[in-house]
Length: 259
Ligand SMILES: [Fe+2]
Ligand SMILES: [Fe+2]
Image (cartoon, protein in one colour):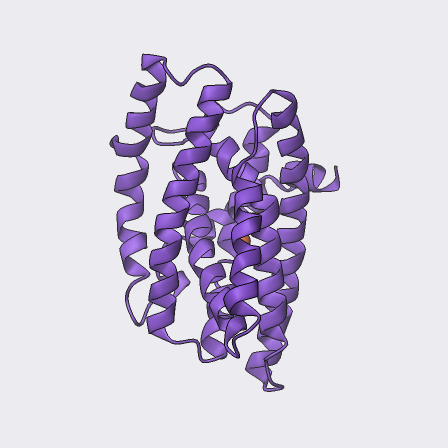
């Protein structure tokens, strides 16, 4: 779980900058209708939240580096993105929609993970129950904000007439790429901290993936839901969890943000 979360953190500075760029570019194509104006407002909020996340995870990642871990995911994602922009996004008239579809797909992942991070606090299935502070607060705060802004990229894609076919193509790509990237970086982190070949690592890994409160079981329904043509992010998860956590921990997450 630690190696997995560290891997996710390593992807955030590049990933979240990409999301910011994608929604900022997408918002330029909005019109002046009241709906589009309202969407523009949510884009502003989204950019503010993601910019703070990437900054804090950059600090977090600097600590990981000091511990001897090596971030391969971030540079690999940056190279892939550069190729994508050169060969497709910046040469296509619909390039902004491709970037938004990719962002919406990743945002679906972060929203699912966000919901799971806030579910069952202190009970069985609470992945962060034993995480030390301030990491527990950092992850739950990030999770709550991901849940809060989970509709922005999706709504923007829809408002700009993004179609279902491409939304699915990019979702399939993101599912594969995300699974592969997460796996590679998690294994690499375990290798560097010397725990890759410990049986207890694999037991806890199997439990985290396939156990009663494991990742596979808890993500199956919301991942499948994304494939529906009439899907909307508000149909899955419970945004009240995020609101509750943010209001009941306002003293703590403000302190983290300010730092
Ligand atoms: Fe984020
Ligand atoms: Fe996000």
